[in-house]
Length: 496
Image (tube, rainbow, N blue to C red; front, side, top):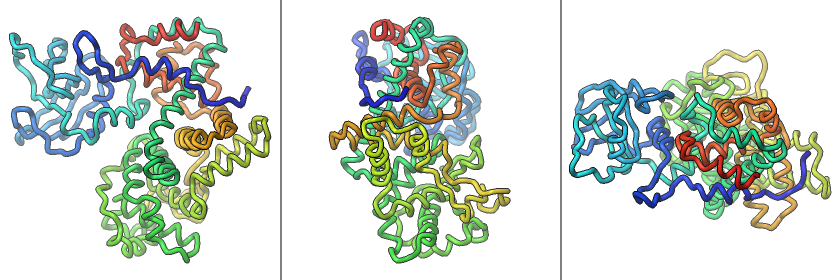
């Protein structure tokens, strides 16, 4: 049953005691979860392609290799170029260079040892037959703590897909109510954590720009998140509005915003003027291109592989332009929060009906049947049999959960609007769950053992988000090594 209650930080009180970055008293070394380094390597989050080994050898990553799900090196079949010579083999990732000594097996084919920090080698045991080395601390696009905050670990492969975790048994012993309570608390903790992520941005850039950047980010989930963030940073709302004349009609304004967004995105190539999807906006872009900020985005920054054509970035960018025009008068965030406050006011002290809340979950849906991108997947593709929404119901719900709720919570708490906070929590509990994805399937197996009675506790997106937060706070921290994970003890202590 959906109830009106504020967001609880109960889960965070014990999760914070198990912070991912902790200094261990026995060796005073910062412990960084292996998965962070894996994600950095997988996405090649380096500030320059001109890498060098500690010995001064020029190093180029031709192919980062394949994420290894089994025993052995972290990535297999990588291709490197060292001083112009090609090498093919495996890559081992570690926090410290000295961690190499603790991995004596399965490293015959390793051609590169990647580590965050060099550490302090033991003087009496110099390593022998080392592969090429790469210390990455000076090459990162951002600091390791900032990367940890911004990486969405659930969008990367799980580290252990075979066994059931040690937390499965104590979780299975909980009543359905207790298990639901744990997941609810974790889900609410996840929103609070995301709220804290946005707080500084709201203070610096205001609600509207922060919300716009967040919506753009959500348009790119999961593969194109960073590209959309850079797009929103390069063309903030104030810049967009200062460029586009105020006296042109709404449908014409959409084309102007599309021209600016597509132009900055790097997705319009040299032949764009000949492609049906870009033919209208290329002349408009030519009028603006000398007045816009420079952009580092290119076609290579956008990913299309393993993405449903309906979710291609072309269609998302087109939808974002419609959204900017739709909410130009009062603002995206203002319209979002004001509309929901109206719904809450009309329901008094009661929870709004599920029909009303489900309808609001479609707030971000964008249909534009006469837009080229509502009828095509690509710039010169075949016409679809019927128009598709540029932003559909599932994506709208994702934007609400990941962007609307946390930024809305900042607004509610800043204004001491307790009823709004409780209403946002009710919205969190209502609506269809997100579709299945790799990490959700993994967690259903890893900590639920795929037991039907436990799976039934995943009533809504709140419980699913709680499951994802447990994964991020505990599983990624311990590389799915249950022997060192405190979560089973946490269950027994806080949820007896």
